[in-house]
Structures are given as structure tokens and as C-alpha cells.
Length: 463
Image (cartoon, rainbow, N blue to C red; front, side, top):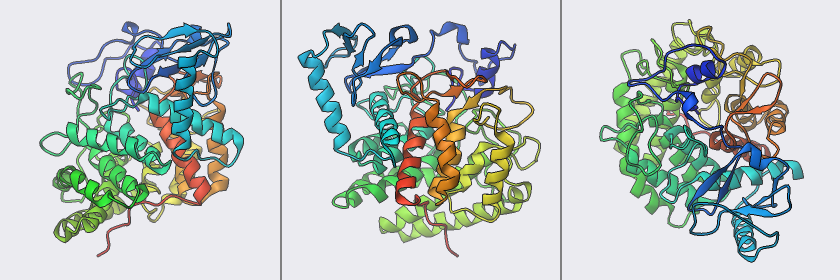
């Protein structure tokens, strides 16, 4: 999930004090214009408020809620219908009602985890994601300036996490918002304002959304209550069709999509795995959903495209160990995990590439850098989404012994409020904004997969 400038490498360089140009068309606001990132979030479901580090000192959440018990013993919460928090006495009746509602919401679904500690972390991630979800289905990446936008990619992961934890209404609301913000040509902006009115700047749109959104629909459909789910699928089908057809049109003679900004939100000069792998997941998902919808023509067309793309990936990325780009000039990338479950059925060479990439990207603090492209100024900072990708890939693929330690590291880096941060600095401390919806979603999906012995990917297209 991109931070502040929406361009990971640039943002990291600025945070480190390096002089670099801003990225994207029209440029983006400098980091100096933003307040310190939040370390937690208050919520009454319809509104949210970030918690500053100074206010969080000595505080903790009341269990199962977004009500904060301050160091003084008094409670801080966001009352229903309000947009500004208030401090009340511990045990305040209105705050207690909100706590009860939060706990009832958790109980209405599933809190995954193999231990009490994992379940506690999962509950906190779920409550954070619920706080970041807007009534219109927009999923805020975080609740600090620069993160208070909805990225289709982050939203798709959140949809899948809500679906697999039994929160169908929230998952479907996200998908409806994705349908409402889809562009006329079937693509999506890199990010949009939370009111759905459009992008906040002129940065390049990203083709990977055309894979992530159909993949999220497929994951939702598998987890949704059977009664009525096909009718709801049909309301989403026009979005799926436009997304899949746009993906088909993007494929070149070699079966690959063009160079495009990837999840780093940096443009590459040749096709990248961070775009190709999600598109493959999306085309396979779309073909399977078309069969569910009784549209064999669509299913056949999208399956043919998926086979072309799969062949192109095998021909160009596989020989390089699924590095970031087909020109082999940009090193390894944590996006190799997108070739594994629950996104794609692991093709030849993917298990070995996961192992090699994990070793190459691991930092002294135990976390992972997004990639080892020599042109990306990541420094000693680990990114929790990139690290958690590997926990999810190994958990979804039925390798709990590999997934467990990685997930344990991510969970160990929660901040004092129990929130999952975006980054971990070289000294092993939580850094940047917290909570981050994308990391929370990946952690939840990993826990679901570990409980269930795996997590399915859309079936690969057959000849």
C-alpha cells in the first residue's frame, strides 16, 4: 500500500532525508505538509478519528472495541453521530453501548487464530478494518492524511478478509463501491477520495486493479451465504465483465500486459510481475464466475486470455525466477507471492522462487523489503505488507511451518495499542501509520488459511 506520496520509493527516500523528485503526473504534496501518522483509530462506524502517539501514551483499547482507556483511567471514544471524540468517565453508559455493539459485531463472524494471542491480534485487525471502512464501501488505507483514500488493491484484500471471517455485508459493500468507482474503460484509478468523487491527484492509474477486483469477487462468492449469492453476483457481473475485457485488451503478442505502475506505484520500463500475476488471478476468477453466472461465452474468452497470460509468464518470468521485470534489471520482488495461492495455483518454479526471494529480501530486523531493485531507496526499513505476503503464500499453500514464523514476526511488531503498522524501522520498532488496512487483511487471511489448512486460488483455465 503506497504511503503519503503514493509512491513507496519516493516516500521512503524523503522520510530518510534524501533529496528526490516527487512522482506521478502533477506531483504530490511534500511529507512536511502532513501531521505525524496516527497510531490507532477511534470509530463509531460512520465516522473515524486518528489517535496521536501522545494521546496513546499509556493507553489501551477496552477489549473488543475502539474505545480507548487513557492513562488517567478515563475513556476516550467517538460517540454515535459525532465526528469528534470525547473523554468520559470509565463505565460511561453510551461508551458501554458502543463496546457492546463492537463485541456483537465480532461475535457475528469469525475471529481466526490458533491461540489466544493470535485471536486477540485478529480481533484488533478486524475492528481496525471496520473502523476504516466507510458507509459507502470505500476502504481507507489508514486514518492519517495521505492514507485516507481508497485503493482498489487494498480494498480487494479487505473484501476477501471480511468475507472469510463471516462479515459478508462489509465485503459486499466494498465490492459495490468498486463497481461504482470503475472507469468507463473497465479500469480503476490508482486511488480515489473516500466519497467516491474521483482521484485526489494525477498519478498514473494501475492495471493490477483489473486483477485484484475480480479476484476479490471470487473470494467473496466462495465465502458468501449460498442463499441469494448468485443474484448478488449478477449485480456485480457488469463490473467483472468490463474489468476482464479490459485485461484481455491489455495483453500483447507475447501474452503479457504492458509496462505499468505496480504496487510500488512506480512505473517500470518493461512488464512486471506485480501486474501480470494479479491479472492472471483476475482472469481465472472472471472465467470461473462467468461459469457460475451461466455465461459460457465470457468464460471461454477469459479462459483463453488467462492461458495466453500464463504462457507469457512462464516464458518470460519463470526463467528469471519470477523477478520484478522481464528485462531482469530490477531484482527480486515480494510480488512473486502473487503467483502463489490464494491468488494463483503455483506454477513451475514458484515454490523455489518464494524461498529465494524471501532470503534475498530479508533484512537484519527480520522483516522484508519490498524488493532489491538497486534503484529503490528502501534502506533498512521493512514493510509489513511485503513481509506478510510470504506468510499468506505459505499458509494458503499448506505450509504452516514456513508461514508461522513469518506471521509471528509481523504480529510481534504491533504497536503499543496492538495495531499493525505499515513499516518497521531498522531497530525493529513499529513505524509509519497504524493501523494499515492492507496488512490487517493479509494477516487475517493468513490466520484463516492456517486454521483451514490452506486457502484456495481461482482455478486455472483449462485448454
